[in-house]
Image 1 (cartoon, rainbow, N blue to C red):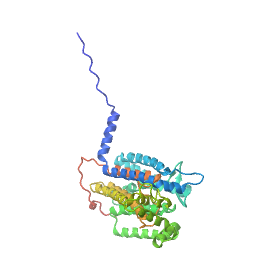
Image 2: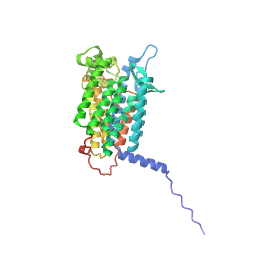
Image 3: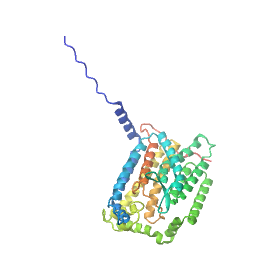
Image 4: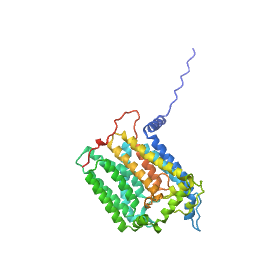
Length: 399
């Protein structure tokens, strides 16, 4: 009697691969895909812009002993962008609780690093802002991804215990950060952190009396900076009255307008060759000269779209921490972008601030990508769960 052949064993799909594909599918469903797309668009624009600006900076920084390639900064920028993309996608894959914990730990670690900068930091161009740990690390840049999360976490304590003096704690934290930054000195970053702080505590329901106090402290800080920080005073004087210290900003504006509406063409710009920091602080002017004012307007619209997208997503959010942290990230990212743009348009004193996701940078590029990744992580949402719309009246007033 013939025996039946045994049935073939079913094909085994490794559970790890199934889980990994399932996790990737969940990540793709829950993240804010339009926000991710806008960030990637800005990074692509940044790669082209740095390629356009690289010859000017390479020629300016070359010496008789060491001549830099025309695409030197472009090649370095691609490496930093790759690291930034790794940081962005890793951070965006975190669960909201994990992103909150990481942001708090990052902010705490960078506060400690800021305290070490005056003691063991390296000095560049008269400013002591970097720690040399095998690689050059700028703690103030990596404080940016953690600051909105840390501040939102503290402000959200009020929802659990109204007796906790969260506003006093937040003012003390901001005062410590401002003091550490001005010891470097870094007035531009101090203004950016202060603006982010103001937006977040305002959203949290700070009383009008406290708002007036905060504005008064800010004005007093600017006055003290004017009389104690020579570089800041020179920039303000130059902005108000013109002068030698203002020449580079004037050159940036003339470079920006030199290309007209459509630009002179890629690598066809001439004024950029005399522009200092063409690949970092004044890259917006290089874009204006080579790609035209229309391209500049498109970039402004992309930044506006990113900020608007974040705020629209937060309207549907029901968690106080998420609303505060997301708004802080939007204020920080948008504030840095538009300060840089206004400087290039000669509408704001020079601040030494990069254009996020576009300018060349090491710490800056990775830190901004990490910020976007954490923002995507804390705003992850199951698309199949219907939520009540968030109302600002739900926050209440924080005494």
